[in-house]
Length: 157
Image (cartoon, rainbow, N blue to C red):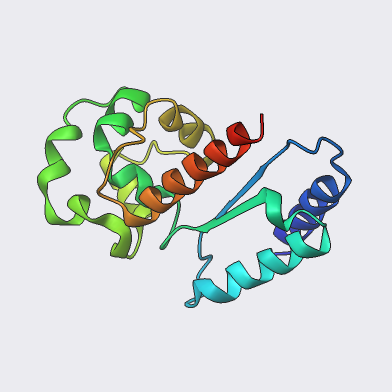
């Protein structure tokens, strides 16, 4: 927990000191076991306001863990991790609507035969994930927020 707090403080110092007026900030968090995502989001909004960047920031909280997004796109996981046969499981109920799944990272570990690594594999999966995927509501909100932010930024040019 101490490491995460230090990391967050560092990020907000960087955001506050950022000079480029056209810069936008996307802050993506999972619930970290907190049952109320509104508490997390309110805290992050307060930090963006304090940094003077509230109008330039998009804050999104994943329903459980960020890995929920990956369970919603098993084809991306299959391709990124070079695992055969994952995409065929997408029609199962727990993968059709994974936002309420209790342990997405644990499920990814099982699907990948314990080879899934949160940081390095998340970077790989991100290269292949389908932005139009509608199976995860929280992922859909993230994509919609990014598109809105992009449209507003382009409108100013």
